[in-house]
Length: 447
Image 1 (cartoon, one colour):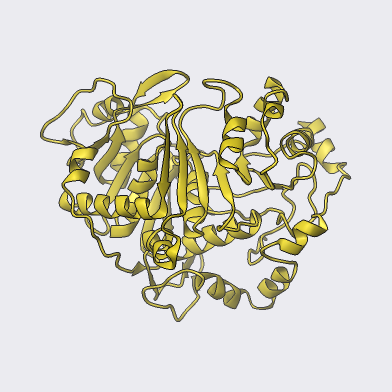
Image 2 (cartoon, rainbow, N blue to C red):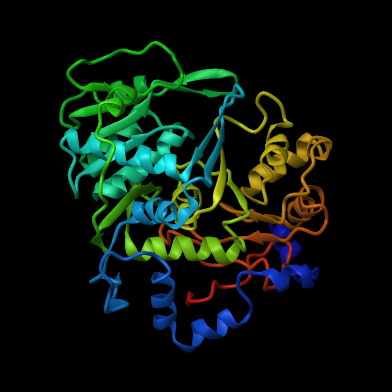
């Protein structure tokens, strides 16, 4: 640990943006001055880059420790992530290039995802889910996971998305604490060459009485045998086939609860962190755009986080989709069926921005540089790290081996409680220091 701290404290290497990158950056250094000059107006301007069903008149109601952002405005998060892109003529843009671990592939456009979410919203309404109800989502990295989250947002149901590796006991605790009325899950999914059952975990979690779950909606993915409760369980594909295709998104109060995500506390059970609609979406979209220099018309973004964690919420679902960018999503692990897999996917889909964890980077280092060097990674123009500190050695390997010795690496710091990036370089603006997040995001104050 002391060696790591000494390495960071003595780091003298600096990497400014290239002149070419700086010239094409979506923001420049003046953004810091604008945020400092009038912070509330700055955030009002960022919020109005989204679509509001009813505009707000007050930016911040601050009654410590409670902050209400844009609280008298109305917004629909799903509309901002879907409908407005279709209405702007970008419905044919790919929302997700998805690959299953066995190699099966799907391409989902923004128009197709919008249609899926509208139908799913109607399915949920038909099951009695209403604004203010809670829905538990216990699913792997498949497009239906994203659709489930956005369908909840569309009708004002608050979702609690649970990581697919959690036990029946951990799942039940979250279902009970959130008082969920519906669980959305899958029969099973692929990981390391095997099918892992999820529906059976839900069944075990719901064995004991005392919960308020009325239905379990089941996506068919693993094709594994599962137990079935005719009084409770519903196949996703059957419900979707009979659902009405149209649904009009209504504005929700800016402070309407969007999701609850559980994070470890120092004592007792995990604590539920609640994020609301207007402020959260504003921050997720804004930070995604400026940190990664996002150009939706040409970028392909790949955040490798699971949607069961906050990084998956903010930088797989809400931030990128609010910005209308194309993404890559994958089931399973990086090393199955081959360690070549992530690099082949970057080449196949022309990924331009890659966002992953330092643990993954250190694993890539151990496996060997011959695997990434076996693919064409020249499409990459921004690299990012998230989830833990990154040591300078791993940072430099990431830049040199994956980024060809020139691609900016943005080291981001934030946590479940903040909902979005708080500290990070800006790829086209600030100097980069190996192993250091270093720069507070414009508009953020940390004291």
